[in-house]
Length: 246
Image (tube, rainbow, N blue to C red; front, side, top):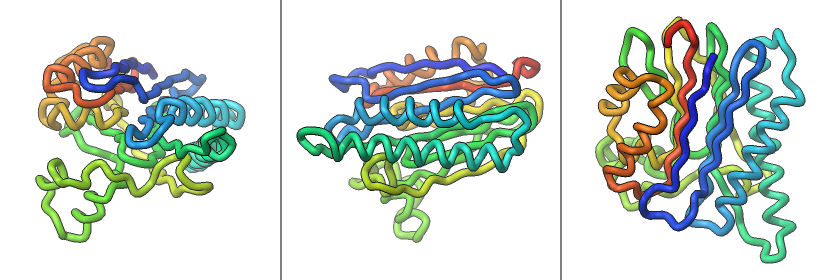
């Protein structure tokens, strides 16, 4: 398994509040993307605290031979630990400012990927034979409105409340994380990203880039395309792929 990473400030932000990390294990690779919430103070600090806490928790508890179910539960507890660390940092800070971040993480191995997410950073799967599809569900107001049939799929991109999160790491003492296991075939690719990518690059274009671009060049090219489209936010990309399918 191999991870290819890229992170960029974009063209409109004064600070990069995204944090990304990838770490190899004997039987897989762990990848995490955190996007600090720009509407709150200390988004950059929140993403850094969260990603370090989640990675440390996972590393300290992981054991070779864990089942997919065990790995998913470990990802969940890693996200919970990240939430506690960010929340405590906010409470103990001199200004008692609120801190928040999204989190999407994946542990990819030969036959499956275990995924956790909180917020609106996403995981996508590109099967070797098939079309690109979003695996995670955004924890946003517009997603809830869409699920309730109050807006169309197209309206989600332009709705006035499109940036409002319903779940985030560190905003309260507890947060609910989604976990899932996705079966993989040789040659399948997994992409983790912040909204700075998918809000700027359409799904068909992203699929084309993933199919046509060498894996080691994909993060840089995705970032370039997002910036060319306006770069309105920080941009983070992690591509996970198996060596045989590359």
